[in-house]
Length: 496
Image (cartoon, rainbow, N blue to C red; front, side):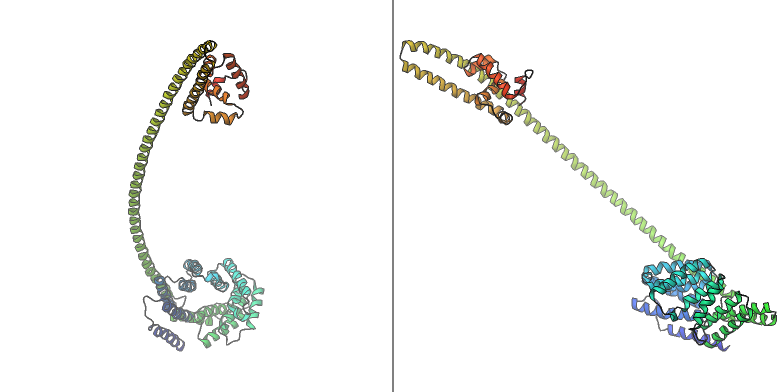
């Protein structure tokens, strides 16, 4: 009864301490301090077997952490939940809590440090071992041990990892390795050490598995004695009394076995131990209540999501409407631009047709001028011949002056023709000179007349030379232009 009273005193002291901390919304620093006190209280409650109270505090703390979106506190809360669910043999929730612990450890940055990662992996190993998933426990513990070695942690601070490793060896039948590790730990742990009770319990488990009942009983009793002296790890007493009862039953000490089993059950009820049916039921009720709260939160979230979805749909409709307006505007602008382009093309085409018409008119004028030149040259030739006759009869000086005037007029007439020709065929001479640089001025005259499709006879009249001279000129021109016998001179010059 004295132990029971002392446990209640610890619990009441913790509760009085927490009364000074307001519950509700916290600032970051206030929440951090509040969480530190609450987590310490949770550890004390678990150590004194007040599991339902510890469970309540964890979920209350997680609610505060949710309000402030503090992932580190949630990691610490789930770390302790894994132990509580394991004590009550709720394997599913225990392993789900391990997953949540890893999730929040990563989000809070705990996994970014080797020391933080080591603690997370140790908790996972411990949880899997308590739920008898030994292979998984070994894998996680191996990582935890490797991280400890990399951090060069002293042996005195590795008891919890090494003892977990030894216990795993015991449970999987590797007794030799388990004994080796436990001996190494025992050299560092005195009877007054806070870890002594667990160490003696593990020695008892090792000897029990090896079938050495008396040695196992001796260590179990030493563990009980240590718990009584330190008033810690009270929940372990229930399991120890149960194991002692089973071993005494094997030895035939049935009366003693019965007394110890009875004491185990009574202590379990008194301390709200892990075997209390009442507390299991209480956990189920609390879980149901918690689940209903979570379902309510989930429902509110779903409603918020629906509202967001409706708002998104409205926004999408507005965007579609704006996009439609934009498309119509773009199409209208494109159509207007198309009409303007068509109008511009029509105008351009009209200008081109007008220009072509003007060129045709000028060509006709040029042709008429050329014919007039031919007629004029004929007339002048006749006059010149007549003057030759006069020359034989009259003054030679007067006749010479008339001849010079006729020759000058002929040259000027050709210059007028050439100016008109260039006006109609502005690029003809430039292109011709570029392709055939060796052409003379007479060659260019001949090319111009050929382009106008004058016959050799007409060209002879225009130039005032004989038809043979024109034919010879055409022959020499073909050679300069590099034309073959089958090439048509008119077609070639017309293409330029």
